[in-house]
Image: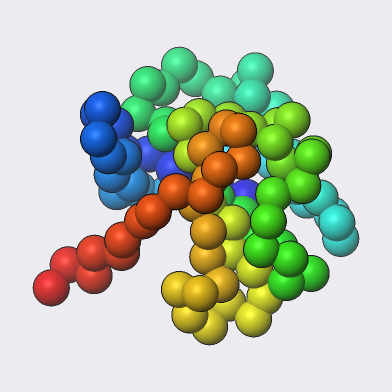
Length: 102
């Protein structure tokens, strides 16, 4: 699990940094971090994590633990952009683009 830092405005959210949350825990079928342990940081725009099961959709648990404005889910086999979705807090898929800095 990663925290996403960036900038948000009315039309777009730009992610420009990822962080490992403090005291994060992961297991075979879950990941978690204690949000109350995070410092106040208004630049955190969401979270990112993987679904090793290759299911490219948020679970009820994902939505219940939504943090920030967006969530990025990458699903196995992790080999292309077709294995990535970005969602909002209601589970709606959002459009995204990846800037490779070129």
